Length: 422
Image (cartoon, rainbow, N blue to C red):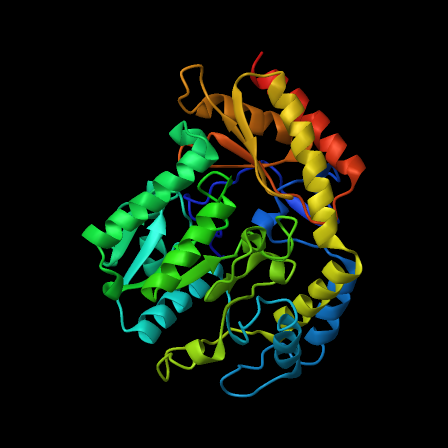
């Protein structure tokens, strides 16, 4: 007689919602009882074209039937070449060389490796609240919450953490917060990490796990100026903000800057695992031989899905839709916040919006945020929390979301907040 199966998932893998998904279609997820949920998580910003977009599904199915795995340091395959050419049309000017891996964390590690080898310097500057991944080097760059860093030390040395211009938390205007953060950067370059020891500055255009806090344009421009002044590389982590999420194709476009290295993932392939870094040829060629590679990077099926994703983003005008629907979503959420003092701030560009819950004394109100998040799921609206205290409820619908779906989500959110604060 065979023994009963005893394997199970790690007990540390906690679901954000109670849904057992059976299928997905567009902006919706259906459970095994065929109950429909508005999915405003998009797989943490991944299903940019919605669940199972027909063009993405068709491209992946076609590729599965011809070549699933063409290991890209052994053989080359056409989907990878086509994707590289296609990305050349949307990447920031001059970032004309690409290296592909599977996850955001891997891409961050690749960017750090490139920055250190290209500059001959060892230190990296990051900002409080930034999330760059869970692998060791990426976790060393991450300060969105201690859960990423705790219990695994010593972490990688050479990382300097500086204040992010989080105006709401700092109790400052955006201009004041920007000036403060840039002053602190200048001070640390004079006291902690000499410019000649500093390889790169890593920054998210919008803090993701750190609370959906947009980086002011003046702050990003200030980083660019200092990087140019000191020969430091500016690495922009577009894992969550890229491919139209913020209402521009790249999150850094709002500031009018050009990064030295861009990190890409999530919305690139509509749910298929694919990530990478882009840099200028003269920078990428400074990477040491053998420093870039991997078994699954640039997978043929993922590349085919990414090509279809780029087609859909362009043909359906999804960047413009993200901008337009983002305004509608933010306006609706601001209306809900106006009726509930517990929501202290509503913020974010495009379809990347956070609702921060605070107590009367200004401290984080995690309990109410948790209740509102749970109530929303019960009412059919799937959301996620973020921020170091878990007091920010974030909304990241697929870029195909319509005005009617935005309005429905806002209505469900209003009901959930009312219930959570009753």
